[in-house]
Image 1 (cartoon, rainbow, N blue to C red):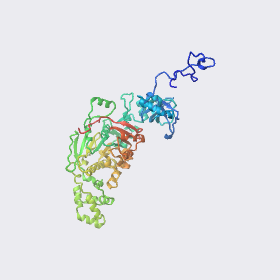
Image 2: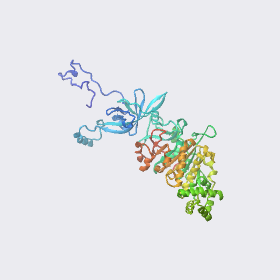
Image 3: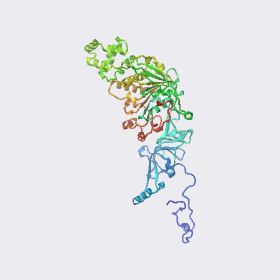
Image 4: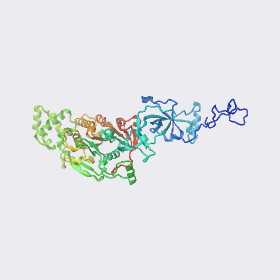
Amino acid sequence: MSNLEDFTEFGGGSNDEDDESATPGGGPDGDRLESFDATPTGRDTGIGVLSAASGLRVSEDSEDTRIRAYVTVDGRSRVRIGSYLIAPYPDGERLFCRITGLEYSQEYRADDATEIHARRAMRSEGIDEQDFKLLATLEPVAVLYEDDSELRRRMTDRVPKPETVVSRAEQKAEIKTGLKIPADGVFLGRLAVGGEAVRTAAEPPTIDYRLNDDYDGGDPLVFRHTLIAGGTGSGKTHLAKNILRQYLAPERSYRVETGGNRSLRPAAVQFDPQDEYAQMHDDGEYGPDRAREFDREGVAHGGHEDTLAFVPKVGSASYAASHHDAEQVPFTIPFEMVHTNPWLIAGSGLNDNQYNALVNVLLRRFRRESGSGYDAFRSFLDDPALREELHESGAVHEATFDAVKRRVRGFGSVFDQDAPPITDRIAQFVRPGGLSVVPTYHIGRRRHAETVVLALASLLVDQKLSNDPDHERIKETPLIVGMDEAHNFLTDADSVQARRVIGKFTEAAKQGRKERLGLFLITQDPQDIADPVSKQINTTVVLNLGDEDAISAVNVPANLESKIPYMEKGQMVVHSPDNSEPVELIGLERCLTRHGRS
């Protein structure tokens, strides 16, 4: 019966006052039974109520949990897959949950009426949703409760009551607590569902997502490493700049163990194959209104004045930088660094036997007898008497000697160029609160660019992990090492060089928390990052990716993984188990510093 306003308690007898034969109300005493209005007065709240029609269950096994809500017609336009909802318990606790499924049920009651209903729908101007039930499947996320006036969360351990009113989560504190998002920390973006920012009644209306940066909440996540993965045009460099800008804010500092109980601002070193990060020296393109908005949200913005471009001198390659105003500091890689990292000149693929000959025989003898410098080492290998002596003594077979000699050639443009060695510029290179950008776009040969990046990265890592460092500045300063196109340097491979690099960075990742060293990796091919390194990464930020192998490699929950190929520029998924539940975010439309060549 569609109209219940005059329905009576016992099935509603005749209501015709002119029918004298009818007993009023149908009662034996002729007394008229009171009718009641089944449409309650007042204003509807929420979007619907919990349904127990097919069971209402909370279980330790998520597969056995069943919570569904009937969504009223008026509330249907406001629900989406992924929307966050609140269902209260009678004692004031609240179930925080998200929509995982939406389903219309009981379309037509009789099969033989399907054709009639279908044709009627085709000829009508719209659909009357009252003919259907919309049921939302809910996934419980947490139970929210008050503890000494502080909102807290715990695992779901209670089943809500049937017909509990379900409302959209619209309080910022409820949503942040339900998703375990820290109230303070490093700003990444704004919470979103389906590409649209979640909005509340607060000011500002959006919900800021932040990474824990406080020792009271555990180790700052910057030292537990970050990976940003996204395809071409997804906005990963834009996002990486915005995140780095937060770490360079004046108020950001971290405790260090040396020199007593003190805190230092972090230094950042960013390896830059596309020559984009030195632009962080300069202001972004946004007006005063947007700047005030950033200030209200506690988002650091504007150019970072303490930005230097450390330009490697490689052969005759010249560096032109009209797109940024950062000071340029030239440097060269001294060949002396090869003695501590001999794999730097093994990039052409020495096997283990050849590598041992290089390290344990040739470099040792060269250092003992012939001095230093790449040109001197090449002349050392050109000596036929040395080749014959080593072969006859059995120290190095002549074929092995020739292979080493061939493969270590070709680095004359990299080492000992006409510029100060980087080891003499450490105080400039690693500065608390400073950003040092190393562009390699101007270097013509990829092998030369890789050697520069790996030489500097190894210098930083070695000094951080050393118990007897040559450069105390590196050891004592909190350090963020950023590496764009990280898949080119940290990939699994069978070569000696690759194994040494992966081993070094795996150890660095493991010791990051203790040594105040954070890896900040950016890549479009996350599947190529070696497993020993990727397993140490705590925070993964994923923008649009189209490759199935790449999507599988980032290891995010299935419900968010399915969204990744459809994300627009700036949309992202964040998986940081020690920070929050996995969530969808939308980044800032504007870059907080200069971005782009125009």
